[in-house]
Image (cartoon, rainbow, N blue to C red; front, side, top):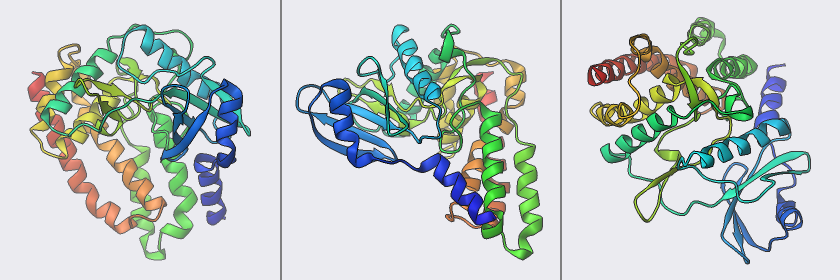
Length: 324
């Protein structure tokens, strides 16, 4: 039963079909000539064209509703309308269907991954603050979003936490030894009590607003990519993860995030009071994902948790002081 649960989850979230026929699909759908396809990530391909600038094609699992994929494209158009530095749709319609799977095409953003230092984190903080000042948008821009798309196709932080619980329960039979039931129950309890930022001020949020999803162009500007699953949610959620990405490298880097973000947004006291809880959730979920995929043991996850929680609290305290 547990093995079937793992298989069902991974099939739903990670499988793609017909990738060897993606090239003729794109050529037929858009009338372009494709020179080569290079896989950049799971289901993400650089489309090198003979007749124009390169594109990126994202092939989503068939289980992701087509409406959700089209919503990803509409959010990119909303961002473009407001001049936000995000990847842009390559052609209209930006979404086609290939063997029952939604395919989103965007313009390829040339550049390199920025160095994860104070300058980059400051600029990302400023960009995130700017994102959170955009007015509420229509349609997809107002949908609930921000959940990590390796676990769920949509929804906000509660959906991400629920998906982590579902994955953990599906793999319990193979990843949890007989003598580890108490540790397993403790981990489930941590997830069920995790801070999801409910009732906090909301904004348009990106699920993974960190250097890994930023591209530094030749002129020095940053462009954010990979907006799958974006939508409205607690603005503290991406800020917390950006602070974690900075502070887990060096605590002082959290200051750079704060300096950039506060140029546009000053968090409310109620947000700062819950910041430590928000910061700790995503690294806990990453550890659960590592456990479920066989990359980390349950004992290691639980042994690491106190240090993770302590670091989240230290980052939150540092950020709160900087915001003050």
